[in-house]
Length: 603
Image 1 (cartoon, rainbow, N blue to C red):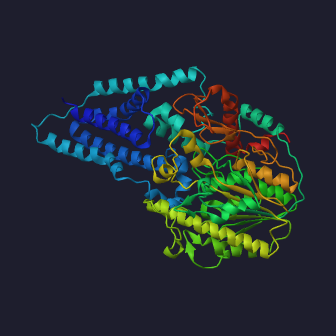
Image 2 (image 1 turned 135 degrees about the horizontal axis):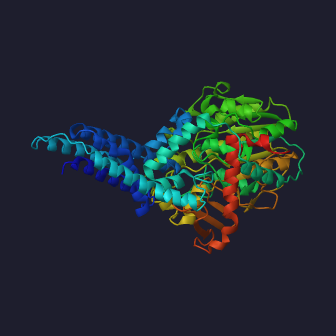
Image 3 (image 1 turned 180 degrees about the vertical axis):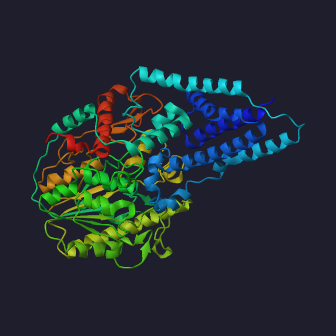
């Protein structure tokens, strides 16, 4: 066959798409295969217009490039549950902080993606040994394959648009929905096009989005009951809820945090809502009561957008506001973002002593002690926001700080995670003791929370196996639940509160306790007695005992409904009332961030 080199190339390309779905545990339906294969035809049929001797080397190069993109997508998906995007480019220079974590995602089997390169190279040399053949140019075949590819690719797309499905026109909650609709190459092509358009697009919401925003703004209610106490808010790195109360070999992982329930309000059903920005997403959602972006981080993509943030509301209400993060001030654009959202001061790496580092910055004990010194220089009332770092992935900790035995655990990264969390537990005790000794505890509003999970919760890994987190709801809770402790001023005794909430609910809670009106915030105070659905970036949500897991291979609104308590599937009618609201909430948040839409709301 005179074009056998091309057909072998297509066979290798198709197999690699299957391998990608296998490695990422994503669906590989016949429809998805056809649309992905059709885009491969569109992208490669032009090579049939080149003589066969040159074509083979071009196809070899395409296989190599395909493998590089596939393996990069696999590693990114394992960490973030999403695909690479050109809109991540502004964040790439900031990714060195998770480099060690990414190494844990690499498996030797991943390099099978490059096996076809070696096989095709051998195939080329085998063809050279055959009887010399006249170079072939196949214009008719190229035209037929290109036309077939265009037909197969665009037919379902046009049918979807004809049905009014809006997954491609503003309602896509996740990049994965576009991936399943457009296939591998279609997704990356569409994403590249969006990136180009975003460069020239003027930010302005549509009339429909303006109406949606105005309706949301009209629903805002604020109940003020506080007297402007000093506020100390502490973000604890990678602290997930499963470690609270956990014992390994008879040893408590977090002995001090376990006891905090006695003198603080412990929220046992609090969820992180972060996405690809992870730590920066947590900071953003906590301080603005908005959702993270579906691609990249607000900190690097929209650092100057207009919000109605917590620090600005407090500053307007008479507070001195300060952020504290013992790393480079420009890292993740924090110096720009913090000023934009209302922090009057930013204490960064240069404001902390050059003492022992644990992870990427000075150890949390010294960070907390020095931060308390900085707080005492603020004018009362103050809002002090601290971002701790010792338990940042890849969880590097000195040997003399490893105090747990951890019998039965073999994953070194997981062992180090538990060691660092145990260390952070002691560091929090140091902070609380400092606050009590300096008479800064009783009258203050003090809050601790975890920013996101450890990144080690994946089904089949040692953590999930040890905790029997195999089912859908168990996996959800292991991945999404983080601890939250709140101590209002002069709290007499602590207790556990089972109110279901998320990170966008914390700013309204703080403003309620501080007696200050909130601006445009999507969250609801955790003390208001009203529970809204806790919405996540992929369109999933939790409302009370109900958990909705969307089917991203189908139009928006499709998915499965579960009971958190039983872990069983339940009637979809229990989820249906909230699905549209969840998608609207994400759309409103995106519009505020990407289009500076608050400027268009009638106050």
